[in-house]
Image (tube, rainbow, N blue to C red; front, side, top):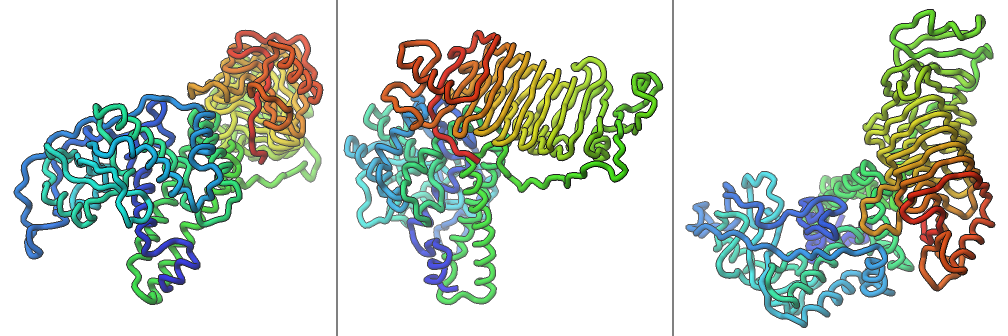
Length: 629
């Protein structure tokens, strides 16, 4: 595979300085946790490593030596401690990010022009201050070879910056630098001569996103530092390496969806285990892409057969991960999205004999346990809940006696069964398995859970996901850690005498075309958002319209939720309005009219419910775009 052919087939530049530097700068930034914190000090993927915290002596073989035949170390004086870099403490809401990146920076640009748009945005600010001091942060491989660096994320050196863009250099934007006085580094025994030699190799120019202005340089430099933070945020969280390889009619619209994705992860709308899987897969993709780019640069002329095979192998490994990431992003990482293809158990149906069995789950069975069963009841005893569920056919009942249970089989309920606890519901506890995507996921025509307590620990999806058919929850306690009860399109939920608390998102989330009947339930302390911007809070119950879900609410107590008691989520263009995006159930006439129209279009029956102490009110509209799966 020649270099030309690899460009055509892989759409990855082989010898482009821009591609190599983008791969080095952007990919290694995430992997090595080199980016500074954003907003409230936390990042989507990892915390920042301030340059002065890595202060050690590294045993090394220098990349460069005084003469080619010698590996004698330079006679170096110990480097000083790096000063503190400037990190802005300003927070940005979703709307502010969208205005900045989609309207101001990207605008009508295509993905291919994104680098140019970012560079133009930075150049606007560079004119205010041409000379300043910064920390140049680069990958350890640039300066060190075959040395024990441990967990060293970067090599930092204090440099003086001439921010006049270097002429004749391809993107990304580069600036001129020189080693600053006093000589300072996060590696105490890093020779200054080595740094000078490496900079000389690069004509004393480095990518501008690799320099971090230090504190105390004045307001103009602080503003430059903020602009650079915005640029790094774009490449770290919004840019994807495949963007400029595919046609995208409205690139700004794609960036807006990724901004929403970022905030959904930050505020807990998308549970932590899901975002962690996505992060790891994205890192793996970037690593394989960088590996492929480096491998291609080593090919000179026509590739040898072995090189061709290896090149294709690396390419397909990368492209498989790329396709998976794009698929997940299209689903907006919703909790029911197939992070790994979900294989359901084959539906068993009824036994060929037509008989119905009652399964008893208990370590020891006594005659008292069965005294209330009729004489003709067929009984089978199991030591574990999983064993009982695996033995079930449609029509069976599982009776669970007090105790603590784990059951992977709850994640794929495909037959019409009833599971009920014996005794007090607080004494029959089901715990989720953190190694699995789901806690309870129902795809059967009719499933009933009765008199149980569900305790969620670490699973990705909602504590209960009704994927199809009808699920009944009766007298159950649901202690959530991720999202609450999710009812997907076409599915139905009947919930009565239950308690839901602790959900990161809404306590009950109804997707378009779903059906729910909620009677005498308590839904409280849900939508525990982590983001400071509360506009995305989903409240106790969240309804997505188009097509409209059907909801009956009777005698429920919905209280102390972050957001509205009941949130009706409508698309931006469903009702024309030039005012605020959110309309509440109280306020001026226009706001009341909008809510009234929305309620009229929905099949809602809301009677004798008690809604109180919800942070934004009882019932409200939230205008927001979403992706239906």
